Image 1 (tube, rainbow, N blue to C red):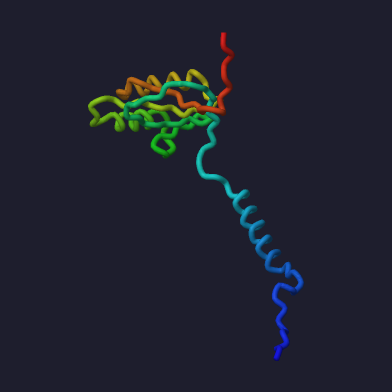
Image 2: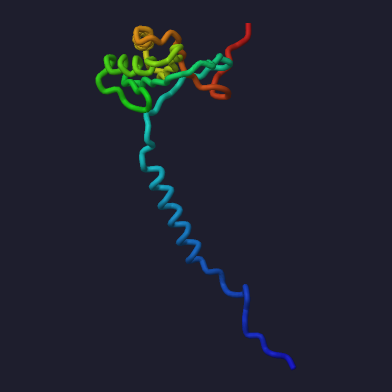
Length: 144
């Protein structure tokens, strides 16, 4: 005796409503992600290849294109006097002075960089390095 089969598995027409709902949800999430600002300060570091680093303890600071200073992920609001105090606190209590790594935007002038290194020297930091983009971002210089 054979029983009739009434179930039609995988034979129903394609239902697009669940896929459309997921697609619209993804579009909304992507739009929200694009429209929200990314936290932080945009810096365009100059590219360079094969530069030495340091194995000494380091402290980091940044200078953006408008000349604002950032130290320890905080904006320096009172200018060079507060930067000098922050650098002095970074040196205090250490046997050997740390290396200052300066993340400077490409549009920062040489005079601003010299002023920062002089502040660091007065605070007790004897070595300062400029941060650059490594590797593929750098254009290799022609060999002579």
